[in-house]
Length: 245
Image (cartoon, rainbow, N blue to C red; front, side, top):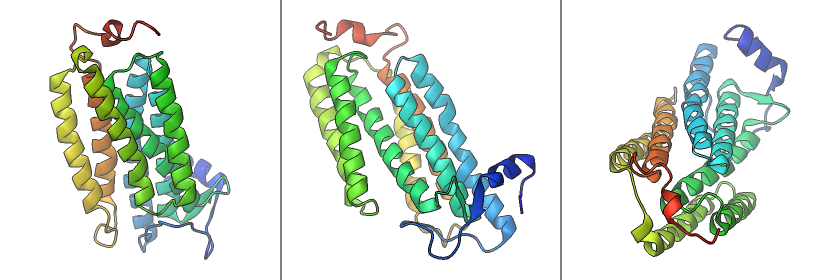
């Protein structure tokens, strides 16, 4: 059984169908028919490709950490949703394991996007310390209670609070691309709506709402990077910042 032709055949070569009791926590109910399973895998798995241009954009801006986190979030999310939809494992890992990794990298990506609005110099000590602390906080929270929403929101609150303090201290130096910022805000609202609407998978068997979340959160991330970069004439806003780096 290898739906979808040669590319899918290659995937199935490294995978196997799950047996009872293999899945981890936080799983969704697979659709009943084989055709629906493949359709759901395309919707929830392939829509992650929307993050690829954002990761390339991050690398082009010299934000390598953000690029790596975005890439890992994209890959682990695609594998989680594909394993969930087709009811298989990949590289011996079931959907629950891929879901766990997806949560970690999604949280880290959002934390990195948050602190980006403080426009810390790319090589500053504070930027490096924040990212290192983010990894520690997110990993510990998710290892402790991966399916407790409080341990998902907690790291994000930590990053938002740190960002607010950093922005307040650096406000006079900050330069934002307002047009990109407005598009990012609208995209974020759309992403949240899609995410909330997609929580009830029984009412959205094809996971169309969740696919929308992948697309809009990618659009939000891309325009956030542009907004953080400042006006077009200010391609390196960090030049006017901390001179001690």
